[in-house]
Structure formats: structure tokens, C-alpha cells
Length: 340
Image (tube, rainbow, N blue to C red; front, side):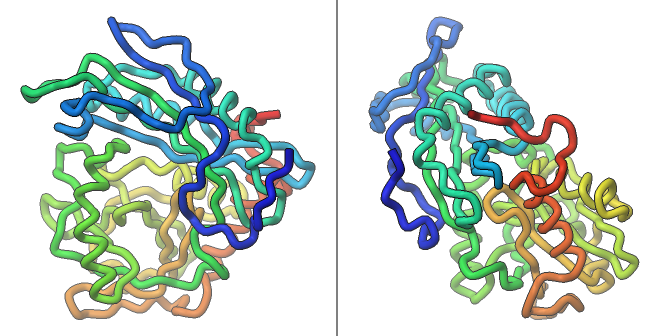
């Protein structure tokens, strides 16, 4: 039954939907998993997730194409990344194939919550896993729960994506051989003080540098970064301590194979910023968010694309990728996962 929701006024936040997916891990194996209406999680007061933050998560979207199909964008890569996150955190692997089946089940169960085509809204999908049994000494749990919740969300940036301002903070995001490359809840907990501090100082986000030398650009608290050179080359930071964004990898492919641009992943030194003409953040929530300015300890670096609108290449990348997602542009093989 169609939901009575003003899709156009949705923000990016949680709204309880009808169903969620739950599977439990105990005695060395996963249960078969099921769709449930119960939105409450009941765990022991000494659960490992509460004591030692043993949890990882993913984020993806379901949306309607122009011919009213309900699809997800490259969810197999989310499944693979969650496998990698779990392995790094000594959690059991929830196999990619089961991950995809669970995504399909929970979206189908909540199909009436998928917003209409061209509404600007989508159904955000949040798979996550956490240690549930009591753990007092520092060690992994041996019982876990895997859940998927969904919520209809509006565009991450209301009224279009006006260029934002980043600052180079004094905080580090991840240790050189730490967990920066996996989607662990603890990474985001570490960034919360820094983002609140940035907002208090009048900035939209932090541009973190590598914590070993503090000379190379890495990512922000919640998104990867891409740059465009004056020769229209699309460049993104190469580092083993940043999250391998699915959106970023897709944009780099689009730059090369759809727009005919050179696309390079390499180390980017902070002093290079003045030489780029465009900059943008990329991730599931916003796809691409243009950056107009970076402030490095009082020194302002204003990109030639300016503070009024996205740069030309950034806009082309956004239009092409969202065109693929919406079914208006032919996708590469395997990129679109049909639900119904």
C-alpha cells in the first residue's frame, strides 16, 4: 500500500519502516535469518559491542528507475567490503551471497517505502553487525547479530549541492596500520569530536591528512575526496588507511570510460591543492558534494570552480553516475542489482 509521505520534504534521517532483517551467529554458525517487524535489539548489559565497540556497518540505497524498477547500485561491493570489515575486527563473515539475498528480502518487504522516481528521495539501507554476548576481558565476542534496517531519506544536501568549506584539522582520523580502511563504527566515533569542532568553527567538514607524516591528503570524516586538475585529469588520494568508497571507484570508472578523461589514484600532497581547479566529496549519501574552499590553519585555498556551484567536470561526473543509477544511461555490466 502506497505510503502517505511527502517525499519531497524528507531529510536525511531515520524513519521507522515496517520490516527489518535479522540473523544471529552462535556456536560457530549463522541462523537462516528472517524478516521481522520487531525494531528492538535486546542484548546483555556487558555485550562486547557496548564494552569494546565491536561493530561494523554498510550503507547503500534502493531507488526507482525511470521505468519504475526498484534497484540497488553495486551492492555486491558493499557485501565484499563488509566481509573485509568483519575479518579485520575478528567477527564472523556474513557471506556476500547471503548479504545480497538479505538486501533483496528487506527491500521487497518494504517496497512501499521506496520513494517515487524523480522525487529526489531514496530508500537508505543500513546493514550492520555487532558482538552480543557478555565480554569483560579484552577479546572478541563469540555471538553476533547481523541486521538490516531501511529508512526513506531525502537528498543529503537540500536545494542542490552548494560548494562547502573544509578545514585541515589538528586531529587524525586513523592510525597508519589501524582500521581506517574498514567501515568500523569506532572510526566514526573517533571523528565525532572533530566534526563538532569543525562545525563550531564554521566549517562543513574536516580534510584529514595522513597521520604518519601529516603531509598527504586522505579523506573526510564520512567521505572520500576527488580532485580535478587544470588539464581535466580526475585524481583521488591513494592510501591504505582510507575507506575504499564504492562511489569513488565508480566515479573514477565513469571519468575514464564515459567521459574519456584520465583518472588517477595517487598520493596527493597538501601543497598540491592550489594547483587543482575542482574538488568534491563522494559517497553513498550525497554521491558528489562540491568543495569550494579548504582552510589550512588560516591559509585559504579557493578552487577556481568557486563557491556558487559545482565545477564543470564534477557536474558531468554527477550527472553521468546518477543517470546510470536512474536507468537513463546504459550501465556497465553488473552495476545495477534489480529487486523486483
